[in-house]
Image (cartoon, rainbow, N blue to C red; front, side, top):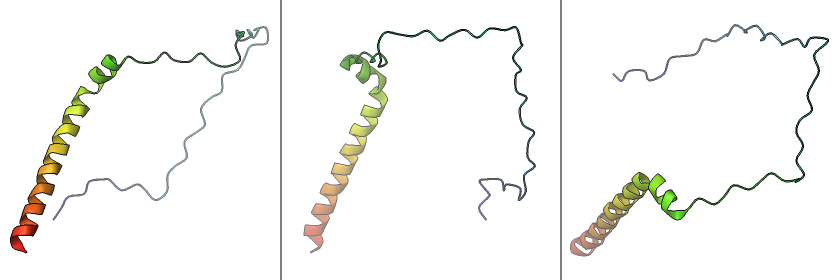
Length: 85
């Protein structure tokens, strides 16, 4: 018999108490947010291609391996189709 993978949730959950809200002191001043002269946020610089390849090297090797295995299986199916026909 397969074992359970997840625990069951209780039917009725007890509501948690709301988090306390921080109270601002009367004498405390609010500081204005710094404003920038530009309306739009600054664009991120493009990541160099070499850095992208280094980041995803493991994924590229897995993808290449999957494509080779998939090609081999497809070729095997073609050969079996014509041999067994």
